[in-house]
Length: 146
Image (cartoon, rainbow, N blue to C red; front, side, top):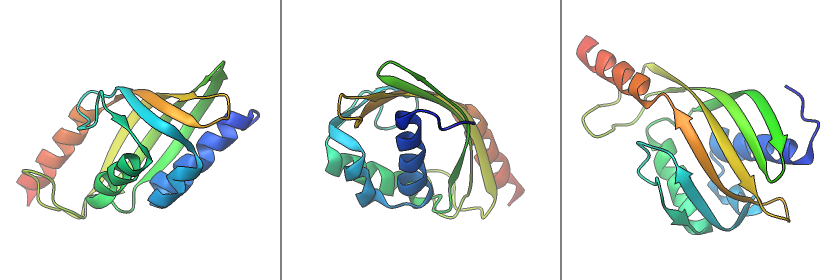
């Protein structure tokens, strides 16, 4: 993966600081005034427009069950106002989810996300596809295994 474009560099830094390290307050440095989740089936925030405080809340809630989560960025492609990121994700299931008590097991997921940027290189939203069924199956398998 090459970070040969300023928006690729900015996105990689955002993912590392906000999602991997859990520094939700750092999101303010990267986000536009509003952030639109255009398409993210299975995500509780799908279709919502968030202000910065709402986005910080989303990060904290999303990381609660998986505080050690890490994104392994596979590829970044920049085109116009967008950067596409394909990724692998892994985290330890350390907090309860509805119907799934913490298992202490590693959960893995893959996906691709298209991030939009404004003229000031601030993130304006995303369109995402992920393997949420695979996550559900792993959670279910871990729960049955005890």
